[in-house]
View 1 (tube, rainbow, N blue to C red):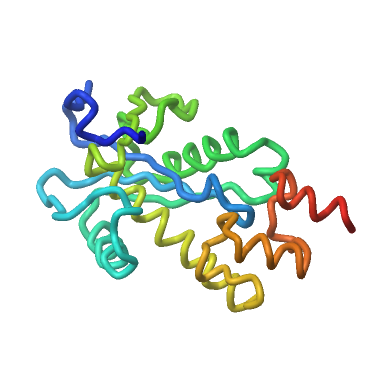
View 2: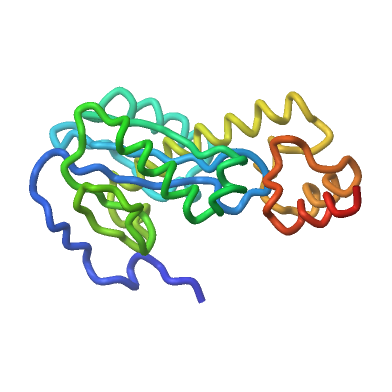
Length: 205
């Protein structure tokens, strides 16, 4: 059974300043496109209501919060690692690369990182990895929202170019619809060639 945020002890953050960046990613599981990461330094004087795990929000609510985060955060940045980088580095290392790029793009710079997951991304800054962090800290939730809105928009754009794949619906995840389209039409340049379902189709060409 999946763990819930309430199953964890209260989050103790080992930093008390204003330049704490929440960091999260979207797009580890899809078969296509970039993995997208975001870093957000929220303004403690301008809290934003309703920040939580982006997957628990409707698309409309995510987009509304995305606007508020961009208007009120002290700093935010969105970065990515391409499908080619996913293939050359593997998804784990590509995810951390995207996270480091997002952190490096912050202005002002962060002093401390709270990163969703169980590993820090290898940045020089101090920080904590927080399991289920997007539901346990607003800065990580904000990062998850920015990253998901950007990646979903990329999938909608890809859908306009290749409507037969259904990217706007499944966002590149290996659903039955996506796997059937992959089998019928073959992999695209944007597909991750190191992922098993894509590898299988490439082997048939």
